[in-house]
Length: 229
Image: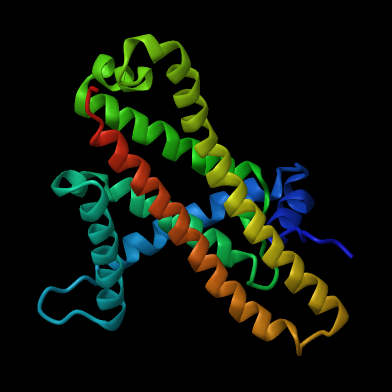
């Protein structure tokens, strides 16, 4: 019994194209294409006068992200909605893919959560430098006292770099654990026990996408609000 099954897309590519791409890369590209196709399809159906149920749901989700940005970043949070929303949707759909028959979740491989964490890490630091200038932003790594700079600098660097580990390991561990439980129960008691566990997996996938997004917004708010000590 395999803990992490390979999606049928990867099997198809291997059989017809005779190449062996990593399964998480195949599924990540599939999720990106799926979200892109959905966005083009949905854009034609947006209505100001009579919004449909799907539009109302998406407006509520966008409103929630905007509230999260306003609370942590402030009035300047609107320009960050694009990347934060993209990360949230990509991670959420990727997490859910592991619950769909014949598919697998890209985030069950540690490489994908690390990649998403690196994007978040580079983005919030870049935005911090844009907001305050490179010199002023980097100055806060030295601490409030110049005599303590030699101590504060490595502490601050370790603190920020550890965020990559925190974001990626939390996401990977939870999604891998959920998929492991579902696969084991499906092997032991097929068609009965896995159903409630899959429902729990939907909740867990949504929760982990929210936690990743919330932490990204918090880090972004801290970077943009950084002041010279």
